[in-house]
Image 1 (spheres, rainbow, N blue to C red):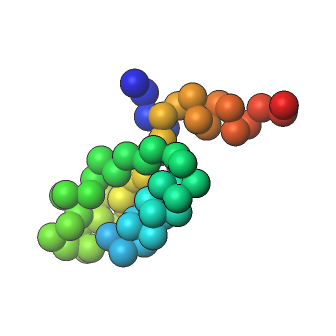
Image 2 (image 1 turned 45 degrees about the vertical axis):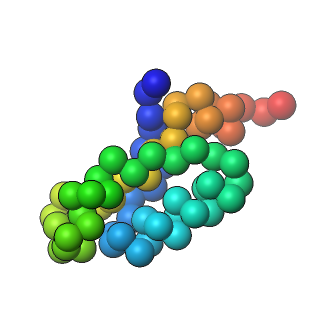
Length: 66
């Protein structure tokens, strides 16, 4: 399954909020940088943020008119 980055969080707290909101809306987010940034938020900024990703199909469906 291919994932698409839809948001880059600047710290772990922001990443958790975004993930929670997506899960509440029945999306299935993936946060690949979660563990590497968990020890230090400075590391997250140095690596260009904590990526929040969803399966590519979700983004495709959201961008199309019904």
